[in-house]
Amino acid sequence: MTPLKDKTILITGASAGIGAATAHAFAREGARLILAARRMDRLQGLAEELKQSHDTEAICLRLDLRQHKSVGSELDKLPDNWRGIDILVNNGGLSRGLDKLHGGNPDDWDEMIDVNIRGLLAVSRAVIPWMVKRGSGHVINLGSIAGHEVYPNGNVYCATKFAVRALTKGMMLDLFGTPIRVTSIDPGMVETEFSLVRFHGDRERAAKVYKGTTPLTGDDVAEAIVWAANRPAHVNIAEMLILPTVQRSTGLLYRET
Image 1 (cartoon, one colour):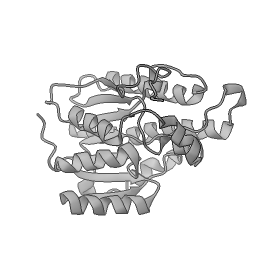
Image 2 (image 1 turned 180 degrees about the vertical axis):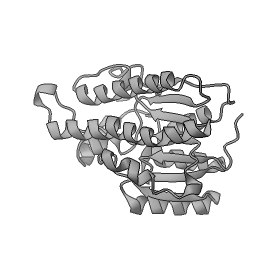
Image 3 (image 1 turned 60 degrees about the vertical axis):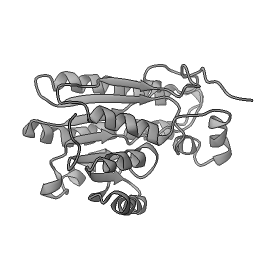
Image 4 (image 1 turned 90 degrees about the vertical axis):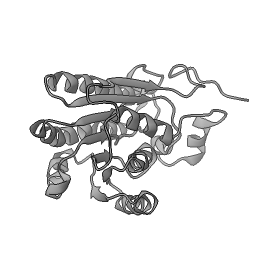
């Protein structure tokens, strides 16, 4: 296996959920971390946790993926000794609303498109050239079952995740002939802040999403990310769809009553 000790990992959306869990998972492997998100207070708290728990070297980078035109300049501020990014985890993403297309909120659409597509593109555009120049690297994009199947009222969110899947394939083709690996990790239902964000802070509605189920956790997905990253150099995990046992498709979810 490729040892991850002392590898430099950039994780977007690192302040909570899958991103924070992924930071802990890589820290346990001895990696050094660039934690990127909007909420610096959370990032700094996470960096301190990692230091205390795993003696991990981590730096925090305030990165708002909606401000995609400034992403490159923010990444350019990284110290020289942190630019040798070995693994980019494009985890930052969100969903807003659950409405029929003809009743949807265009502001919600803009936020999903800006973060899930344009933000991913901006980070990748900044980091991949460094990998190409160095002749090594691994890009791991967080997709979703929503990039495989469209579900009712998921219209624009699903479209953004189909786009992530297409962009992942595009990266694989564009990086043909290089040793740079590209992976898509596509979870089904995961209990994080996802639904709370989707429903604009409505905790009661968010809780109903997971009621009577045993969904995936952020740790489950983080373990898969680290496993894919830790394969031998000649092995590329192109795509991994991960579902909780109670889920068999976007719309088929067993709930205990």
